[in-house]
Length: 536
Ligand code: GLC
Image (cartoon, rainbow, N blue to C red; front, side):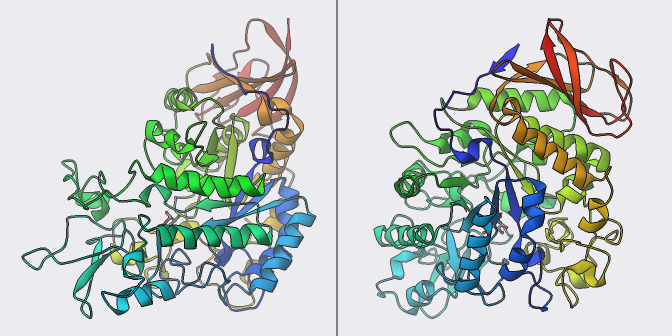
């Protein structure tokens, strides 16, 4: 048996047993009839979130922005974009969230600002401007070319030339997103003030955007060329980001964020970090210099869907966690293809059961609770710059950002006007109202699963152990205070044997991904179950 024990906490922080739900504000609910979602719309739809049974909402960026990267290009860290509302509406939303016993996390984007941020406008105004060094400026190479070989994650070089001052600035993402210089203490101070601004307003934490990028190697040396590069991967992969990301000093930055969060108490920091597990877990920090509470674990987003691969991912991840490091699992996001698009609806249910019964904090993404699948965006409706700048590579993220379908009325109840992105093709049947009325729907399955998770300590904070299962059945046990739950997930569309531990009998079948269940000792095709065991 491969067991992982949850360290008992006298007062367990809320996020350990909690579930995070990501809202993409442009696409949740339009409250003012302009085709784009906003804060007032989110406030109107909070009952959906509360009824679902999650604990916290993470909002993708809501700040003033030219929207070149839909808010991940921030032009004012302490305001609200007109298109989303204003600070009063934010306060009203926060209050309404708290009234429902939910928490609210914002998205903090420290690596880069919009080139329309006043800091960058000052910085680019002259070489001797006091804010020049707030960003990363370099002279052209001696031959007049780029300062180094770094490529942007959005394609093309990571450098843009500013003719006015004769230097290049670094942009890891779009040219409209200039990288801040985190080696400059004034930048650190200014960004610390941003965290305080929102903590003082009452937000419960942050998801921290691309935090492994924040510090670059001194001297900005060339990155090694990627020997395995193929054009269909996107230009980001032309070089290996050895010097442009994941530098040792980034952990001091993470620790400085944590110190502020700790001053306020019970505030959560989730770091967006896309690195192999052994490097990812370093972002938990050390006992003396803790980092973020939850470095996002994205492995399920593209895991091979078979029991052996999943078991390996879970085992390796659990083994890599530092003492006291709390696990977390992500099943969808505004950047990743929809899980139901990748696996089909039947296995998307199994995936939901997996993410909500593993040890650790799950992050769910809006619309996955309806099983929205792959949405094809007609070429003239593409909005994602990542897609527009490297067309034809399938890098577009619009398909995961389509508006929430609420009912079968005009524009699915999302907006009084045509939404900024098309709806899922099947919105007339696949929407919150229709699924709410159907006991066997994905939505009601999610609600049951979340209720079960909330009610069973074994699920939300118990120990975890993988068990042997039939071929392509992922089987594990969760235990707490004498309660034993067995989870068996049939990852195939064929019947499989249900193997029960020799020292137990099944006391109760608590939940199945299906309404018609397999017989005794059997899992139906695509069936996942949660069973209560009794020790013999
Ligand atoms: C993160 C965001 C993504 C954005 C990028 C640049 O990965 O999730 O949407 O494009 O950062 O800010």
